[in-house]
Length: 248
Length: 322
Ligand SMILES: Nc1ncnc2c1ncn2[C@@H]1O[C@H](COP(=O)(O)OP(=O)(O)OP(=O)(O)O)[C@@H](O)[C@H]1O
Ligand SMILES: [Mg+2]
Image (tube, rainbow over all chains, first blue to last red; front, side, top):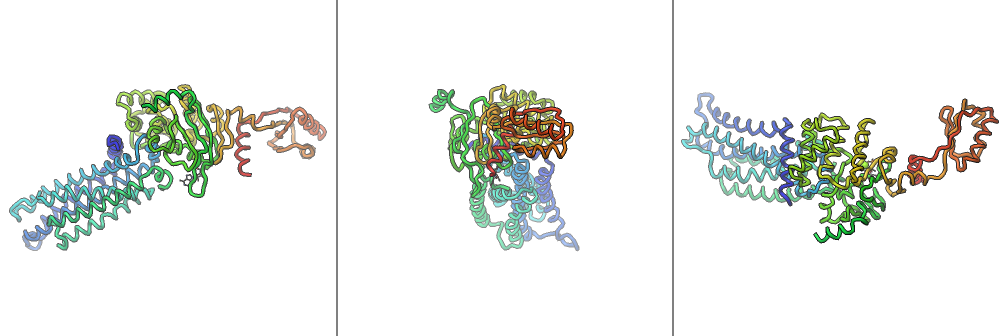
């Protein structure tokens, strides 16, 4: 496997994304909104009817779970990108030409993976910085210290988020191979965020201890196993013969 | 490297493309049935056949895009179907698929540059080739224009250029002039003739007989099975018999009745023009004109025409169905 080939394919995809406003928006809008909205809501929560805002004890349950909101984004953002980059090639019928070059199936698949992975990570990291800075400003007066960054959040962003993005990429390669419409691909692709939303809600309701390092490591382990499975399935789907004769 | 050296010494005797009993089945359906042919270096080989004949399937097998289910094929001596030869074959060949398959959001230059990179061409080589190809096709002015704004003919030309970015000696083209207006089709055809002058080996899928006759050195007629192979002339001659075309001043029922009594086959009437299949024009034409005179008709002209490639094609393709 030659990484240079995959990189050529990924950079071509980046160029295509930059030309398509829809993709640019869908990558950037959600993380920015989420990152600004949550701190804003927190700063106003509990302020009405003469309240004094959320108590510090409440915050320490809410804050670690918020980081999990980015797991939902990590499931969502690659959906848009991968569906465009794979279903898009299908619609433009450019895969045959690509397959005719001296490039292996794995190299093409990896290229597609990189082109979905990097922008997703960039958008999430960018958003998370905005989120942590704003959140610190909002909560510092209550907590008496800056909650972010901390080791567990680091674990979420540097371990759980990449694992989730990989999971989403793998899932979307499989979905994209079965459909011919970008929008349908996205609608099915997005189902993946349901379990992630479940984790987030569980955290907010204090059913899952998302502030606990062991819990995070268990989730990471589960994600890793799912990743392996999905990547294996994606690789099995992405074979030139299948692509040309069975993909619809 | 050893392999390459022996390959060189064999070169004069080695066809560029060689297929022996090449077969592809999709489940129960046989798309290509035991096809055997070879294409010499520098030859333009026309692969003719009706829709669903298996032309695209054959190209895909030869380009190592799909597996064969039987037989053998070699490209420049490399085995089609051998895992380790597939990349070498794909390096050597260029493919213009039946769908032009360009990146519509990118410029003409970026499309070419992308494929140049995938074929490991250096930046200098890519620049030079892109400029040469776009200039040749009259698209240099448009190099930075987004492909989605191109006309169909321009896209088609750019598509061929993308298949040529690495200067392949063997080029596969799947119906490069299909769905083009006559003028665009002509520019594409002229371009193929230009490539022929450069002594490239070209494998051309088409169902345009006229195009095949004008461009190709050799033609194969496919209808799942290979029906015939030969030069355009050979194929024309392979269809025995000639046609007589009689132009009358006025066709009447009396004339037609008289002609129907003669042992003629395949009479067709087009206005005042009658066409017959004849075996021996010297004898039969005399009988025809006599019958017309006796029925009170007047003959303007009598012409004997040889069979055309179209006749040969239709005969071969139809013979399969019966
Ligand atoms: N992926 C596939 N699965 C099943 N059958 C297929 C597949 N691809 C092609 N076929 C069948 O194989 C036969 C040959 O198809 P092919 O596309 O090679 O024909 P063609 O000569 O290129 O036709 P056209 O002139 O329409 O392009 C057809 O009967 C077609 O239905
Ligand atoms: Mg075809």
